[in-house]
Image (tube, rainbow, N blue to C red; front, top):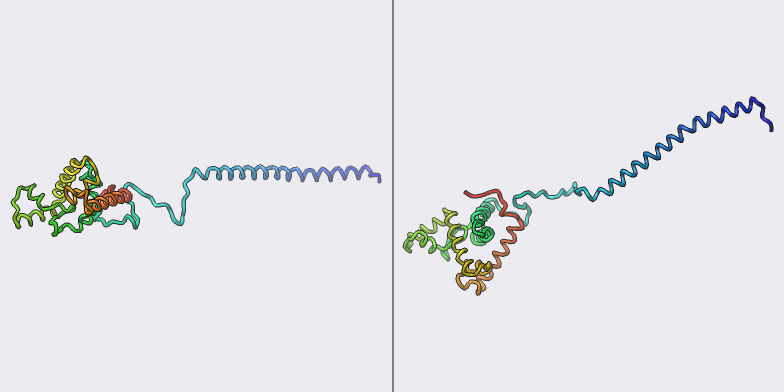
Length: 225
């Protein structure tokens, strides 16, 4: 089949029109491919960077812990008890007895809630025995003065802390800084470290100190005056 000159010209025009319409589409396809590749690269970069970002669980957001006590069910403590723990820790820290004094306050008086023990008799946050108050004030041992001594221990936390610290310092020196023996002797006397009563008490104090540290009760901003 032989095409005429007019047919050839028409065919060329049609071909040019096809090419003219095809080039923009090709360009668009190339641009789309480049854009898709760029997006893919960005996604890959984001995935690699995931480990560098904190993981946030929106349903159960992480607990934010400041310098204060940890607030959980296990570490729950009433405000008045926390106040006593803080006071005891701050007072005792000057003598390297911060945790010890705080633990004794929780053990002996439940953090200042039971400040009188008639069976000893003793009183205050640390259940200091009344004879120590009598010696401190140089009072005679009379029923009236014993009542006064109990009142002093209950009403004056600083006095109770001072007497408790003096007792602990004495035992710490005598036991060559053996903490278990110091705690046992504070509760059960000179042979406390050899008795079940003394050993059990020391074990309780050690356990309470561990909980104070875990719950950060000593970091309370509530400080008694």
